[in-house]
Length: 399
Image (cartoon, rainbow, N blue to C red):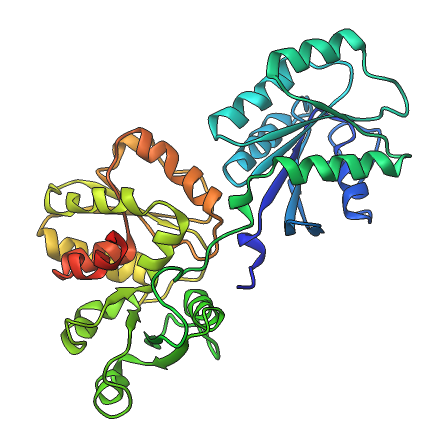
């Protein structure tokens, strides 16, 4: 399946001001995409660039501000740089002969988010790394140091080889969305409502992803709106091997599709792909224990303009309130924006399918929630639960 920009593996480049991060990226990419300057604080915001790495495919490189930026806006820039750790699959930590507290802090962040890293001694064409420093670092972190020179193409090749060896295969060798659920010539019926929240003239990303995934599995797509579902089952194809629906019409589709036919939703199959499925299943029953005044955090992976039919901001909050019969407060955070308040102030968190997020980004996003033992669910699983079809919608994943 073709990946969008945000689902490619992300590699962050970190280090102090003027350590050579931007030069490093320019050499890797083969073009000048980051400004190179001797003036501290040149890189003010994270800069992204997509490139191809042999054996991995397309990746997104992120150039970050100097971790020791002492300018007026330095602290905010550093905070922005550290936020990148929640997005990446691999860190490249650049340093010179002044390796110390700043670099230790970067490695701590890597360990915190379980991110592998490569230590890169830059500007080796100007000064060789001190032997005592090299020995100390390699012993302390049990990590080989890659020496890089902007004037030596061999060092660029060596760094690329180290990236290939260090980045987790799971960052780029993702299994198909429906792997293990369908086989060659399976017939998959996709139910795709078109309402005011649907983009003009096209389908939403999860629908496109599933259509492509079905084709990649050498299977057959039937795509209908919910209003044509009953006709399709009666007159065109009565026994599809799998039905996948948009979560907002889960209840209606469940009433139409024979109980012998496997049924789930776009959001649920994406949750299974992204690796947080078990946490969602465990946390969803919290919907039965909500109390008046409880605050629920709705997490959206993408940023979009909400409408009166928005699933995460309008429909789902209403359904949860009606189901619980409680007076609840809802807050929504889009993209990778910070949570508006401490996570322990929420009774529950509900995450969207995450179609535009990488597996690592979604896991990092949910990590503080899970560590705080806050129940977490998913749009599709929560909707299935409230409609009494939780077992049916998740049954196929328990094999």
